[in-house]
Length: 161
Image 1 (cartoon, rainbow, N blue to C red):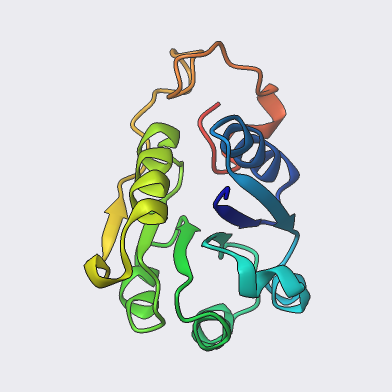
Image 2 (tube, rainbow, N blue to C red):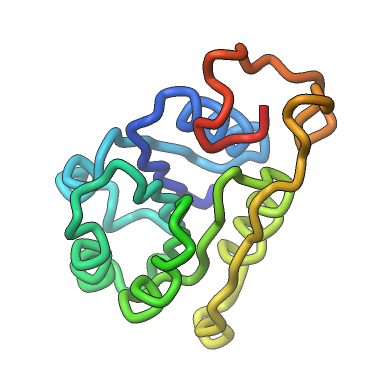
């Protein structure tokens, strides 16, 4: 049975990039535009991993993550954010990892695979995926090694262009 991943982001380009690559990696992928929509989905109970962009979410996003952990205690959660100070706050809400923006896609997908295949008894270590170090002015390839397809106007939206 394919593992299920729910991607939550209000940024269409970020959602699209993450969903397409995760589907290519043979995961069952669903998405929501915000954290409230994610909670309303019945699939949250059957989701193995939650990738959630907390930038642009309600100020009580960290509290809502704790509620999600109650709904599905086995759910692995990864927070995507520009705000490094959130690392301490999300640590207490059941989050397995934080991926700093701009996102290092290769590091995020490696972490996703590691978390989703991890046995529940081996969980509990908090992880951080450091932000990408790609120079967006000089490097037109993303971390997956493919030519960039990101239009200039989307640069800085939290993904490797």
